[in-house]
Length: 199
Image (tube, rainbow, N blue to C red):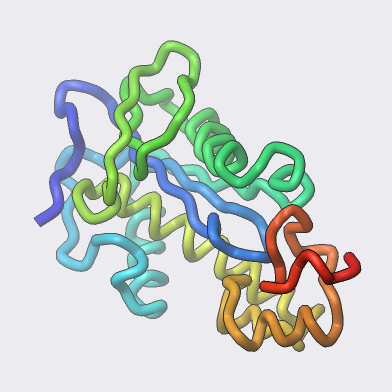
């Protein structure tokens, strides 16, 4: 069973991102402060759950959280500052939107940058260890999935409603046939033969 948080004496948020490995679309992060009595038997790493359960949990989290926020960092900014920095920036922007401001930050993964003087701890696979990080992973993934489904209507050939921008065969075949869209991350290796692709 997942633990609620790292330090029970602090008002603590969990934060996580979605879409870091995608070729198209934003990287999306969420930050969540859960009440001390929160629990739910389904809540775990969003990647382990069906879309239906993620959407049901999203409603529960948004209803019961003390505070939550979700932020997209778009493709142009990813290309300017690189995906690691964009992921951290998305998490930081989400945390800044929280009210009240957390006294401690629990971060999924192994990289983060200080946000003011708020202490933090990085936790590898934190979304399968702590409820507030798992909750952030749910909100980040569902918000990003909704964004990708929306832009899939504009560019249906790329299969984003299914692959959400990840480098699947269908996605890469569409890039090969039709070229990149304004939603593609141009600093990413869009095709294996990128060096010979005229972008």
